Amino acid sequence: MDSSQNRYNQRGVSSSKEEVHKIVDHMDRGLFPGAFCKITPDLLTGNQALCNLIHSDGAGTKSILGYLWYRETGDPKVFHGIAQDSIVMNLDDLACVGIWDRIVLSSTVNRNAKNFPGEALAALIEGTEEFLENLRSLGISVESGGGETADVGDLTGTVTVDSCAVAVAQRKDIIDNHNILPGLAIVGFSSCGQATYEKRENSGIGSNGLTSARHELLSKHYLEKYPESFDPETNPEYLYCGPHRMQDSLPQSQLKVGEALLSPTRTYLPIARKIIEECGEQVLGLVHCSGGGQTKCMRFGNQVHHIKDNLFESPPLFQEIQKVSGTSDQEMYQVYNMGHRFEAYCEPEAIDTLIGIGNSFGIEAKRVGYTEESKKEDHSNHLDIKLDGKTLSYGG
Image (tube, rainbow, N blue to C red):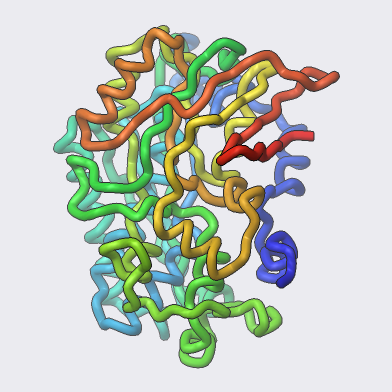
């Protein structure tokens, strides 16, 4: 079998986004260069005590999975989850800089109107409003600022769903991940199970790595029936090469394969709010383990060796992806969250408090690692993940 990296490349996907980072790392990084998101001066009102944040992200190719489910079942409500995916990928990044309230959200939908009809579009809009209302019921103020729906059949055979979030915050309240230093504990919050504010069990998938997950798990049935769901220039060897249909049962799980792949991205915003309110200065950094999976943390901190030696057991969906694809541990932990998608860097004395906060929302939490001084000659950040007697090393 080809190396997993080659299989990603053949599908037009980069797990490390090295080209992107080479470009943006030389750009202005805002008021807090070490923060999880770029933060600018308050250009809206000119208040020196405030700052602005504009953040964009989306559901990625998970929307194609929603499209496949819709076409197979006829149920447009699957797009309620896709709307949540796009929103959470923005809001949980904002949470990592300490913003959890008074957020305005705008959505952009690019669709092929021939394949993605009005009832599916209506479900997306309904899903957006439903999820925002759920957040407001939890005391988190997020309002819809409208959006754009574009019919761009030449650009997509299905649909893409993206969002943009805008917030104004006090500069003094910003969480700056540059403050992640040696000597801290890392507390992880599980990505699977069912939180008190969720309607059903979550597989833990989030919205990253879905191109490879879709093609590695799903069968040629989708290649033959839905040519609009992939790039026709991709070698068919790398398209829908798995053993499953979406209605198949996922091994070691109560979920179907399609349900697990489409599990709405969990928001940790209620947890982040409580952490910020109750733990204050004891939490030095927050990381959303999205693009880059468990290696995302390497981009944050100051001359830090991140060590993760007590991770959660890999959930059934990730186990099945790895089993059918033959992807190495090294690559799996660089692409998928593998069990927790949100982590707090805290003083060791705060570990029990953070675990208690997670548990209060029905989410398992535990100390998954710690930080120490960088071992690199140039003092750059690096990461070791310790699994069953072996160590996965990242960062030079």
